[in-house]
Length: 84
Image (cartoon, rainbow, N blue to C red; front, side, top):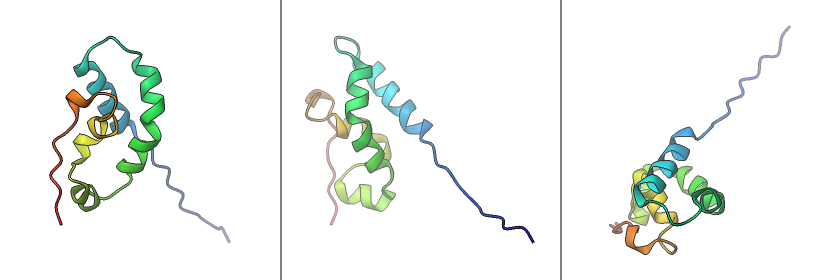
């Protein structure tokens, strides 16, 4: 008898790509690698939420990079659309 266990590992290349694209859009003048490391935990936490949970925060999944960097790069902060 074999014991087959289904193990799923989730990687977040889409989130990493979104962070890279956000930094490329902002431009240079800072160290994006260092900043990326410092915000990655918050970005992963938000990325794990459902679309409905993100909507309650007033953001979409595409807004995550700008949202986690809103205090460091306020000119690029998303406009929050809070819903009840």
